[in-house]
Image 1: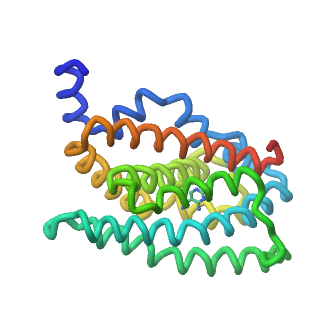
Image 2: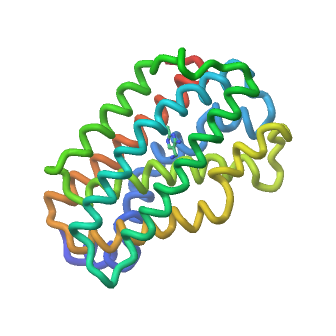
Length: 230
Ligand SMILES: Cc1ncc(CN)c(N)n1
């Protein structure tokens, strides 16, 4: 790679470089028709229910993945960094998130114990599973973690921005991931990613970029599934 391009990446951070380079797929993941239908209040009740039930299963699979990232951070990050505290904070909030899914499902008469993961969900959980391996570098796993959280943060923040027409009963859902605290949390993970990628080998950088793209593609497919367009 040209030296000038490398020094530019160092200045703005690798995540920003990728967000610019892969803008189209990032926008497809964060401005998906399912999200836009929440934002303009045209979302179908069955689509929202599908999303809720499938996402509950996803979050259950996300817990051991986050635990595996936490283990990598404990082994790899320096004592001065706050990587472990940041990831631990994310893990702790997943307990509340799971309870929230159960409450919402109850309100909508969804029996979560009877829900089976659809193909796109299985595929996404398969990626999480593969990233839990000890052979996957911390830099690669934390990149996936950031991308997964960032897509939800950007998507749902869009639904509660000024000018959005999100129905009042869905505002709480959107605020779960679209709120400012969740935004700061995503920024903290992004900072970890940029720091780790600055010291990564070219091989690790390539793998991290590919995993970033896989997450975006799988998020698009997850939204497609929710809209009923598998
Ligand atoms: C599919 C998906 N992607 C991301 C998130 C945010 N943790 C989620 N709950 N579900």
